[in-house]
Length: 427
Ligand SMILES: Cc1cc2nc3c(=O)[nH]c(=O)nc-3n(C[C@H](O)[C@H](O)[C@H](O)COP(=O)(O)OP(=O)(O)OC[C@H]3O[C@@H](n4cnc5c(N)ncnc54)[C@H](O)[C@@H]3O)c2cc1C
Image (cartoon, rainbow, N blue to C red):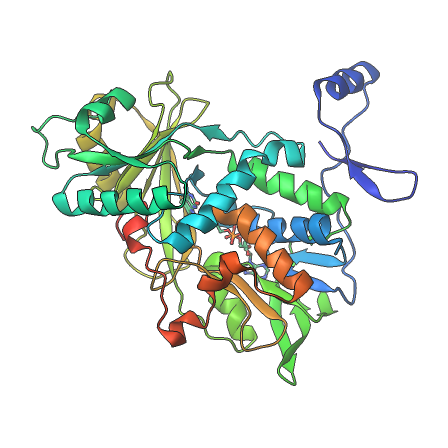
């Protein structure tokens, strides 16, 4: 994997193709590294904090769409070490508000071509997404979402239990269970992706265009003077910069506090788990808000389960027995026949929850301090569109129309973008 030097001294990513694989195999030439380690420069035009999908995508689009390459991406850990390497990688755009649907739909469109654009197989698998309704109230919300989706040209419809059974035969759609399935919101364009590949693909593409990605580099402070950002203090030295973009998700408030910016965000852990691999039998993503569980099957055959966030704020990423016990009970309610499957592992990440379940993107009262945060349990799917939009904001100084509804100022103005009804599981 990697990049190599051109005659003019700049690097370009090594081309991944069957032919190059054959050539390198025959000539026994190793693949160059995907990204380089650099000395920290004393100044950069733009400093991005957080090397998750949001920070890396913003760096990539700054370079590719706007030619801005004097950019540092800083991370106290490693690429994808936050939520971007811990999520369950579900993509969809069937949200509840027109603002949300438009925004996530743009991301899905970018994801569809991402493998070709990055020359990196991100394994996007479009397989349909079912949100089950177990009550009349949730069926009403599904109908509402379906109508909003259709008006935004997004493919979504409410289907009955027979159609649910046809799409996911292993689901128990009988009336014998405690929470019978009354119907579902079916969203054919939804699917799953390989999260690591997305992170690595953006990192490789940004690095090759001159962006410096600094892992093991913790931001310790942000100096603000005369109402604007002046400098970032890190564990490896200080950086003078006029622009800092906060892409730290679960740690968003810790960075914003350094700049003196308050964010209405509370961090909660979110856990997930995966089983041993079995033959492919689940061809759609299945979500049950009432049972607080969702499940998909990877191309390797493992079942990946997620749930709602842990009920208390914390920065801990430890798994808990309570989570597994509750998850198992709810999953077996949906699919009793998988009772003998063994869980391989469980893990947790951090989620930056906002009061209206929508992100916070754009400018803040401190000039040059920008935020791309508030991603809760749903931010991986937004990586490409957020990167594209934040790069445009940095480059032009103008907030793109697509992200204007998600401004920090909406909380003061009382203009919330209520997406709670579209959160994949109840919170
Ligand atoms: C279990 C789980 C399942 C999920 N499932 C889905 C899903 O199916 N679909 C979906 O769309 N979303 C999902 N999400 C949410 C999604 O993972 C996140 O919203 C998204 O990855 C956030 O990306 P990010 O780039 O903003 O932040 P992150 O990937 O969290 O990156 C933030 C980075 O900031 C760094 N950082 C923090 N503080 C500092 C500092 N002081 N100095 C330097 N660096 C710092 C961290 O080390 C980290 O690498 C899930 C999350 C979890 C935990």
